[in-house]
Image (spheres, one colour):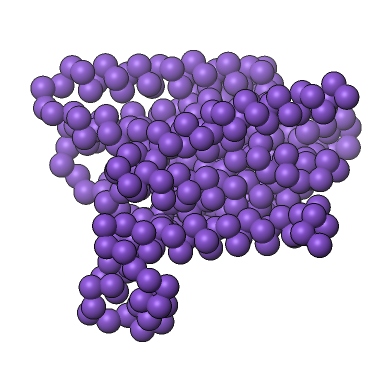
Length: 333
């Protein structure tokens, strides 16, 4: 029964959702103040002024929701980037969005005392500028996927170098900023959730309308044009959503690496072969895999208050190597 269930996309979604619920329960219950399932249920059903209710609603729930939303947003952004560039090793950081958003936010943090709402705006502006430069550099090549990746990589390296140079040249203490650049959902509040959730959820809904164009973009460019496909328009629309999802997430959590790269790979590996590039399933699966990856990583990071971005790399790196080797062996057979 279980193998048959896992062979369908809906069965995989059900299993993934069960794991996500289990991860959520563990995240809410485990910590310096242990909570039983009965206490969790009581606090969720009827919030009160008790210590258990405070711990759940004010300390753990915002962190949990932010981890899930950030993971889903990065997973979908990674799937879109890989579809547009026709490269399964692409990610939002590879086309310059993450580094551009991080540079803009660091500039605001270092030189101003503006609130987190302005950091959010700065992140989206920075990611948009970086993506615009990438598109401009590759426009003459008609947004060729290879040229798009190379242009994005140059912008990403430039922004990363500029951020590092800025942090080591200022006189103020930048240890907190270096910690933020590792990516974390610790010490986040409902204010952070209210910043990210609306724009991330709206963007994820809009992604559903791009599922069919993204599937078509896996064909050769000339074939797409011959059937009336709008290659440039589709790529720009998809990359615009990638910018919004990635920049908004970076603004709130910092750059969480590897999620956008690994989540779509995990999704394609689990899906049946004939659906591995059907983007109505890939986008949903990448969102679920991304949410799982970040929430589970944060659950483990919570013990020593390690930035979740570090654990995502520690888990994502070996997972990616294993997935690539598995796909290579299957291809060799």
